[in-house]
Image 1 (spheres, helix red, strand yellow):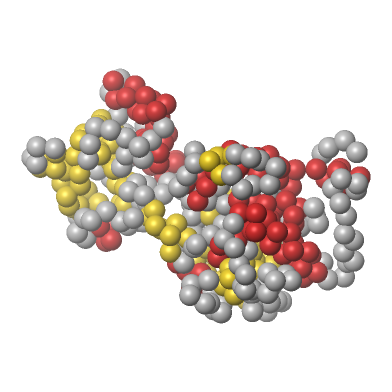
Image 2 (cartoon, one colour):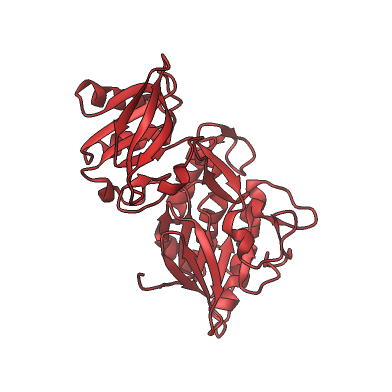
Amino acid sequence: MSTPIETDVAIIGAGPIGLFAVFELGLLDLKCHLVDILDRPGGQCTELYPEKPIYDIPGLPIVTGQDLTNRLLEQIKPFGAQYHFGEMASALEKLPDGKWKLTTDAGTEIVAPVVVIAAGGGSFVPKRPPVPGIEAFENKGDGVGVHYAVRKMESFRDKNILIAGGGDSALDWTINLAPLAKSLTLVHHRDGFRAAQHSVNQMRELEATGKVKFHVASVKSVHGDENGRLMAVTLSGADKKEWMHEIDSFLPFFGLTIKLGPIADFGLNLHENLIPVDTAKFESSTPGIFAIGDINTYAGKLKLILSGFHEAALMAQAAFHICRPNEKLRFQYTTSSSNLQKKLGVNA
């Protein structure tokens, strides 16, 4: 187990609301670590509708989910937030000194006086393929067995890898892991993809040079040895013919569903899988734990990105008093404060 990370605020969720929270907290000199089960920032905006236009962001008549995320990342760059992608917040514990310890399923421990839950509708949970007995081979570590996310590319070096899926994640990891793998095979149920065209083109180039094999096929069963190590899968082609394919690693990318996940076990007061908060601080009934964005509920709640931005601003003011109990908070405007402008790296 690694040494716990000490910071001011631990944020669960790196969607637009979690990212903007970094900005509001950064203006108050509060440092943040963000945890997100996805392998990139943006949450629903980039995972579900990266190219879908959004029309109700103030000052931006039209912006895509990906572009909004890019703009937010540029805005918060001065504050040096640290990200833990591909990790799910799995446990939350109150420490004797009053701080919170947030633990992820990858073993990362983050200790902070404030925890902000900005998890949208909950955690994105990978869809498990309908293959009997697949659970026995999941997350064995060291790049072997079944994995629904790639946390350390190096762990897949010199492995025989099978990737299943036809979306961006499947194509991206096919391209990224091909140089490391002993062999890499991509399977999809049809000879067409939902991924970006340039990614499809890159995959086709790798296929043409023999660095990647592609089959129109689906995985029917998994096979392992007496020690529980994944050894092979049975593939079924478009013509229904089946064959055995030897592998070390199976990476199925069949999309994501949204579930509250481990947050439901954090001991928080929940109402219909949402976290009730006050509207002065957006703090939950548990002191030091805040909820902003779609994960919270209160009278008059509107599930809009702009509402989440407002909630993040008020949360940050309250978080300051917890993180800096002996300091006075002086409210400042970015338009007139040379101190804030210096933090942002802009000319006064």
